[in-house]
Image 1 (cartoon, rainbow, N blue to C red):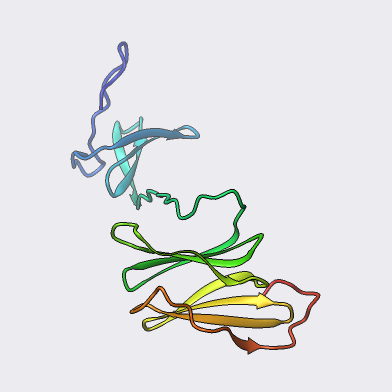
Image 2 (spheres, one colour):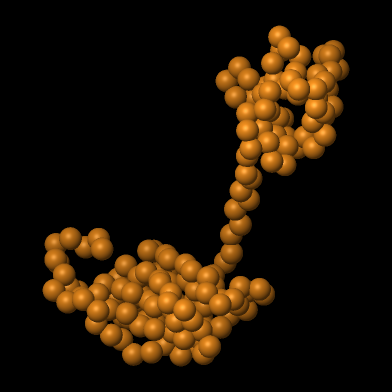
Length: 171
């Protein structure tokens, strides 16, 4: 760490006299000066002129990936990774759709394909090498299957549940 002119350096030593050698980020929280390493958080004690370990931390670096770009708005997105494929299902003004890409190089395997023109609220599930796209259609829950060995083919629609409560649309 580098200090500002006019201020004294703060030693990077813990209470048990260990050097903090992998400091990555200095910040404050309320009246506490904190330092992050690759896997720990330390808080500075000015009375001791030492750093106290607050425990392990795990950094999360979110990433984003463009799945589809068109002039329609997508909602009710669900995603799953299965057998080296990334599957994304969503609802737009034309119904329930699915896009499948290769998880290594992001090449399209099945692009913006219609699952159901009348379906809503799609959800993905997997059993072994089979991907299931569940969706609500009126008062029914239906699904279509996609085998990951041949992910360009969507099997015929099957009704799983009938006679849902039409007034409660969240399932």
